[in-house]
Amino acid sequence: MLTLRTAAEAAQAASRLARPLALVPTMGALHAGHLALVAQARRDNAAVMATIFVNPLQFGPTEDFSRYPRAFAEDERQLEAAGVDLLFAPSVEEMYPAGFDTGIDPGAIATRFEGALRPGHFRGVATVCVKLFAIARADRVYFGAKDAQQVAVLRQVVRDLALPTEIAVAPTVRDLDGLALSSRNAYLRPPERAAAPGLYRALQAMSDAVERGETNRDRIVAFGRAQIAAPLREAYLDVVDPLTFEAVPDTTSRPEQKNFIAIGSAWLGTTRIIDNVPLTVPAVPANAVLHASVTE
Ligand code: AMP
Image (cartoon, rainbow, N blue to C red; front, side, top):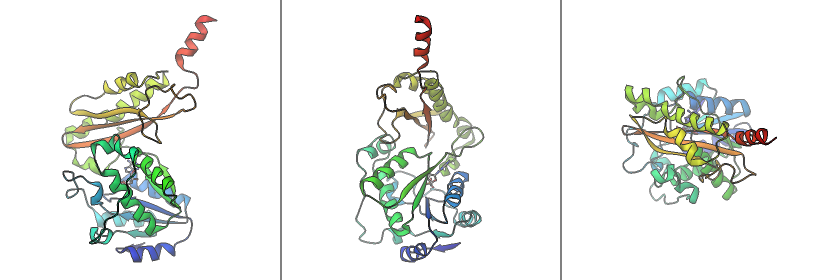
C-alpha cells in the first residue's frame, strides 16, 4: 500500500490503479464498520483507494474537531492488511490551502435532521467529498448506511452535478448489543455506553410497529420514544423517505412508495449518537387483512 500526502501525487497514483477503482473516504480512528466498507470495495473492484482526513469544514465551531480520535499508524496498518492499494492522508493545509474559497451547498436535504442540528455540516461533507472524488476519479465511492442522510446528500450532489462516480452503500456494522459502531463511541463513559443500544432498540420498536401494520408516523415514533430512557435523551426520531429525508406522515400516503427508514439520534451526556433501520411495509396492511376476514 502506498501512502501519499499530496493531492497531486495521489491523483497521479490513482490514475495508474486498475479499474474499476473504489474510493473509501474516512476520518480515521478505524473500526470494523470502516473495514467492512473496505472489504466490500475490495470484493467488487480491481483496486481500492482509501482516504483519512478529519475534515474541519464539517465540524461546527463548538464541535469535537480538535479532540476527534486520531490513530494514524494503527489505521494505516489495518488498511494495508485489508488490501487497500493507495491511502491518501492529506493535511488540512493540503486540502484547504490559503485562498481556498469554494463550497458545495447541497440545498434543502442538508437542512433537515443532522443538517438542522449541525448547520454547515453537509456543506463541509459535500465540499470535501467532491474534492476527494476529483482527486481519486474513482468508478465507485463507498459509504456506510449508518450515515443515511450523508448518503442521501451525496446522491443528490452526484446527481445534480453529474459527477462520474457511482455511490455504493454498505450495511451498518453493530456491536453485539446492537449499538452501531462509530469512532465517537470512544467518548461514551461506561454507564452511557451501557445505555447506548437503547437508540437501536427504539428504531427496532418502530420497525416492529410498521411490520404489525402501523402506518401513522406519530404512532410509529411513539413506539420508539417508549424505549428512550435516561441517560439517553432523544434528539430526533422520525420516519423518512431515504432519498429526500422528508418526514413521511403516513406510510400509506404515497401508495407507490414502499421504501422508508426510521431514523434516530440521542444524546448521552455531551455525545450524540445516530442510527437508522429500514422499514418493511407489509404488502397488505395487517388491519386490512383483519377487516377482510371479519366482513367475509
Ligand atoms: P467516518 O470516518 O465516521 O467519517 O466514516 C467513514 C465511512 O464509514 C462513512 O461512509 C460512514 O458511514 C462509514 N461508517 C461509519 N460507521 C459505520 C458502521 N458502523 N457501519 C458501516 N459503515 C460505517
